[in-house]
Length: 301
Image (cartoon, rainbow, N blue to C red; front, side, top):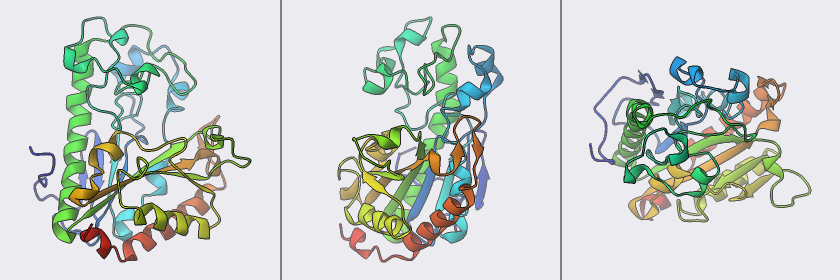
């Protein structure tokens, strides 16, 4: 399937083994150009992964963007298509290139196309992570390339086929598409850049390469009006999804939003805090503002 070819017409709610899709309207006729994605909020840890794990489930779960899918769960009711991962980020990272793999993790030799030499792989955070966010090794044995291929073919590929289809539907209906890739960041990371006060949100647009400037400007204005401290591109400028799909010249605009977990989550227990509902309400306000905005300039971009 061509990466930009719409997926076949399907019901408004599609549940795949690897992801959930909820459309805001009928397939092929989305009411707005907005597509929301949450690739790191999955909670499923398959038995084959846990049997090979050196860590307990809670330790591995700390790499999740916990509950981000719930924070943006009202998006389809407000006009944005929504795709959310079901498998955990540590099992397969959907915000990486499919075969962005670390050869040192595998018992057998990887094919040349899978021997990635990226900064993410060097940090242990390739398509199949070697470590969790605290730097702890996830596995007590070497994996096999067959295991990696199974995760990629079973989860990574179908997720991105579905995401590309949603983008294509929005573009076909409106002449352009706006992809917002939602994430959360540790509270410690929100202090990056030597700021006196940590950022509440970080907007990543690949330093202007992934979308027209009016998109992050509008998001920033809406968030700041609600009292949030917003940063741009530091410490997160956008990952694989933003880089791969963000093509302003082709009228596909992608923006990554990182939420400070300290706003809504107890990072030790991974339980939502009292701030969860207020943040969710504010993100619904933001979504409504984006759905109602005049984006006609993007059609001509």
